[in-house]
Amino acid sequence: MIKLIVGIQWGDEGKGRASHFESKNAKIVVRATGGNNAGHTVVANGKKYKMHLLPSAIIRENVNCVIAPGVVIDPEVLISEIDEMIKADISITKERFHISQRAHVILPHHKQLDGLYEKLKAKKIGTTKRGIGPCYSEKCNRTGIRMFDLCDPSTLKKKIQESVLLANTMFRQYGEPEVDVEEEYQLCINCAEKLKPYICDTQFILMDADEKNENIIVEGAQALYLDLDHGDYPYVTSSNCNASGTASGAGIGPTKVDEVIGVMKAYCSRVGEGPFTTEQENEIGDSIRELGHEFGTTTGRPRRCGWLDLVMVKNACFICGLTSLCVNHMDTIGKLGKIKVCVAYEYKGEQIGYIPIDRENCTPIYKEFDGWELEDGITTYEDLPENARKYIEFIEEYTKVKVKYIGIGADEKQTIVK
Ligand code: IMO
Ligand code: MG
Image 1 (cartoon, helix red, strand yellow):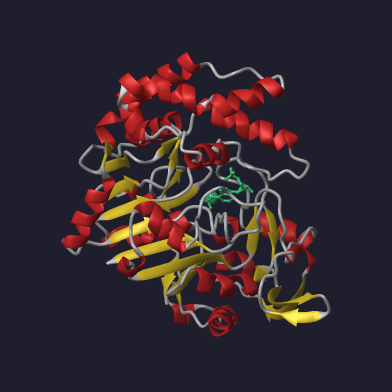
Image 2: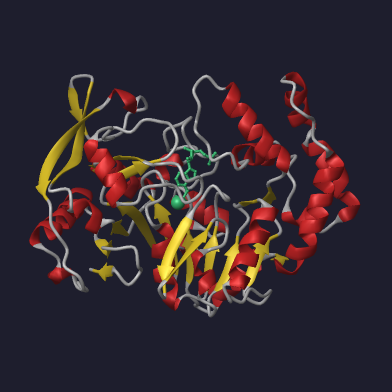
């Protein structure tokens, strides 16, 4: 059984938590796109874990974890994440943790370029400055460095020299220090020393597990509206983080996928720039931010907050081929008393139910719901207050996709299976 877990808003929907929850019966959990621009938080066994590159299931020692070809890896960040886990008494061995030889490497000049592009752009993207875009650009330019290259000192320096040609032209032009090839080479060699045991052909591992009918979970990163092709370009990340891109990044074909779970919050949040039709730049947005602790796991930035946009969710159901939904933060949104949900857009004098390319020109049309208070200890769907059930059932009716999981608190125990 192969399941994909993907974000269907602008990230931070609780993919890590959903993936960790689903991994109870899994053999392997895979990270397939993005890099350490992701920030996945899991609260389990009374402890809080934050992951950027490692799949959330790394904290379940009976589950194997894979970082697949579609990911871009900052090797220093990965090493420090591994060290953190080892400090927390989680065993990370070459038997249970695998890094694809094909995954690309983020080097210091990618981070420098990320900063420089942001400085030069008239309209800033608000990237995480982790070097994601420039690393994927070099990959597309076919001058990138792969994890495999780290382990081959005989060709590595030449490859780095070639990979920095464009970056150096930019740095020279804008008066920034040029790349120190020797320094990047040494960094790679040092990191290779530590990461080498885990670097392998992950394709073979996934095919083997599938042949044995073992469960594989792919933990998406980012989200549909940050997708390079289907998101709010240019306010997107540089990978295809939609469901098909996630499967592809892992090395899994579309017909091999049995379930696609779309993770969403009961409202919307966004970090970075870009259109946000239901944004509430007022006390409502402030309340959502405070109640939902909406501050970035990766950069600490306060997240922009607003009402749930079901036009986006319905669009996501089709593009991602969702088989079910996971709705998180139902505890948070209920506390707002009166709640609004966007059910259509007004665009050029018409009412529409799709997302036009210039969505910044859309005005939301809302339906109003009454809030709810959740008592402690709720474990079943039937125990939820009627207003909360109405909210969930409206999402199902509007999208024609079933809600499978409902998040009612930070701890993964506070997940209702519907
Ligand atoms: P998870 O997996 C939320 C956003 C950045 C910025 C844009 C481009 O935790 O949901 P990048 O550094 O990728 O070039 O930045 O994408 N972004 C995210 N926002 N959650 C994420 O990941 C994100 N990853 C990237 O804020 O707007
Ligand atoms: Mg996050």
